[in-house]
View 1: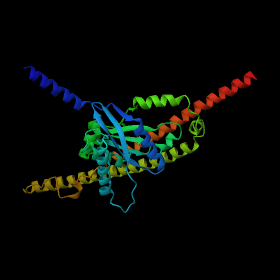
View 2: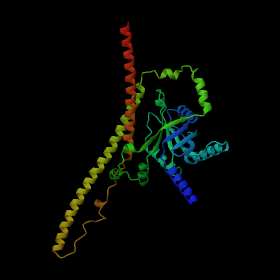
View 3: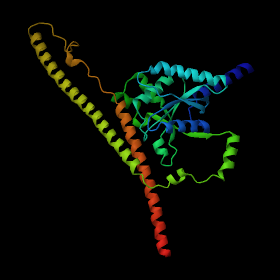
View 4: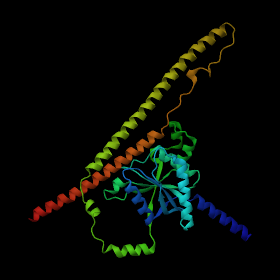
Length: 342
């Protein structure tokens, strides 16, 4: 009896552990430094790399990472990339380093990462890894004094819909899925060993002011705002093109429905004449007729991603404008106080 109770308790505990949602991504400080170094060295080119660690309950621990090499176009990218990953993981296993894949990292430019390629990569990882994340690092935003590092995953509802490859308006309404429900941002927690923390505490008091500290005092956000506005205008153009696709679809659908109604009226009149002459009526629906062939509805995935990207650009612009206004206000009041004192 006790054994059965213990076994059932262990089964319940294992079930709860499997079903626990991902709440925190805990990254080692050394892994973050490797990601930043790799992304900044090749900026503005986009780079990727592998994340290694452990999946422990509701916490995904990222303990190490390694970069993917940049290849030429004429090389066999897929085969060589797979061999490179396997060889790197074998070498890490030999030196007793975590070699469990928990996702990947990639750089971005001004937050332009929400693409179909990112979703496809997520789905490919999900086939072999139960839970994985993508660490996004933006060197352009980090130059403004902000550590632009975020952990993303696809929502469960979106992944279920993506497996069915059905992004029609009716399906999205049934699932109550909107453009904000594609990605989920997971909080990041930086973890360091006790020895590293003690060493950083010892160095903190003697750390001199660096050029990076002076760069944060620069009030000029013109280049950053200009590039964000350029990307925002491009996204608006892309969204307009997607809307034109849907307008063309609905015009074609309306035209087809009108043709169907005209054909049905003609067939019903013909059947009435055949019935009056004692002949059998013809079927009102003809599957071979091209006007009864259903028109494929365009996928709304691309428009959802573009809308999500537009929201991201707007948030970045709003954030930097707010900070600039606050800094200018502080300088204005300080200057006014100095004039009053004089």
